[in-house]
Amino acid sequence: MMTNEPGYFEVAWAAQRCGLFYTPVNWHLTAAEAAYIVRDCGASVLIASAALGDLAEQVAAEAPALHTRLMVGGDRAGFEDYARAVAEYSTQPPAEQVEGHYMFYSSGTTGRPKGITVALTGEPFGTGLTLDNMMPSLYGFGCESVYLCTGPLYHAAPLGWSLGTQRGGGTVVVMERFDAATALESVQLYGVTHAQFVPAMFVRMLKLPERTRRAFDLSTLVVAVHAAAPCPIAVKEAMIEWWGPILHEYYAGSESNAFSAIDSPTWLEHKGSVGKTLIGVAHILDELGNELPSGEVGTVWFSGGPRFEYHNDPAKTAAAYDARGRSTLGDMGWLDEEGFLYLADRRTDLIISGGVNIYPKEIEDVLVLHPAVADVAVIGIPDEEMGRQVRAVIEAQEANSAGPELAAELIEYCRSRLAHFKCPRAVDFVAELPRLPSGKILKRVIRERYDRAHAAESRSL
Figure (cartoon, rainbow, N blue to C red):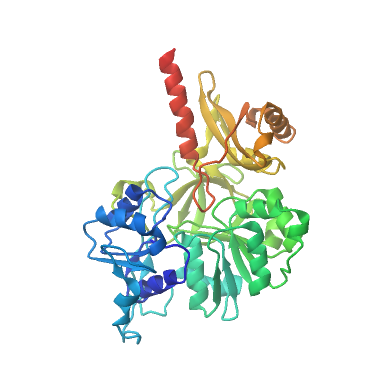
């Protein structure tokens, strides 16, 4: 349970070289939520940053199975000082080392987070994990690479790609937290060659003043990888126009059951696609498990990929697989005739209004490009006649602009670009959308607020 700091890598590599599972804990969680993860993963050792001392102390009190507690960068009652604890040990590596594996927990956007486990291989250290071996061949990582880590290290991509860079002899530049202008400045300052982003970061960089965007030399950047959420086509077009055809998109989950990838030239011929699968084979199935033809939207399943389990949750593991052994992350999408995969939305985010399927992502991709919109979540709220109606929840770029006039403008903006039945019937403004530090918006939290309000209103009638 550590902030983005150099010691994070000491701990991760120690576990990786000793054949252990290690679980990064999101320190933005409440003490109860974090303690649940520490207990659920079966941790016997907790290592925390001094900056998170209060949280660590609360978590440790609720995790009686811990036999070792280490504090990095300071003293805390009930914890050993990390530096003193390791000082007595030899700096020479053990004679025999085997590969460990990170054990991430799902983000919990649709429920309580679950640990994702794969089998430890017992292979000698140096064999590398799947990602480590893909990075050089797919993206040109090597000993001269300088990788900009823009996200929190407790997430799968920031930590996994950072470790992969270091394993190949490259350098990692870690941002303590993402800031659009600071990211551009870091590319120039450190000669960054590779960087990774989520689409929300692209939007923030594109909305910087033109003078700021053009102030930095980005010529060292040869690969910009993005993932974690679908990228609006217009946003990606703008980024390619700005940075050139160096954007690489991939689609995968912490479950590691599949991996698809696409580069900029190919994407420009298949706009909106997340590429062809390199690990696993993609299938689009209907609710009965029947394979759908090209162009039809269904649930995305994969065959032939590595198996995974949700720790301590056999029911959730079973639900992720079908009778033929295919697995799913719960996303919806379609395949074109050439086998390129496109994502529509999460199954849990789908809005069914009057019997018609409406995909929030399509609406969000339009609204997020309006200059007055900082971020947006489109959800379905209860409707007595239609079942659900489309509602846009907006975080405005300028708080004082939020009001009826902007709401009407945004609805009209949407209607000029999409079929009217897809567009929000109303717009609500909030000071800040609930989101994970990765940038993912917690739609579950937003939907629950509206559902509670609707239930209270119904009881009062």
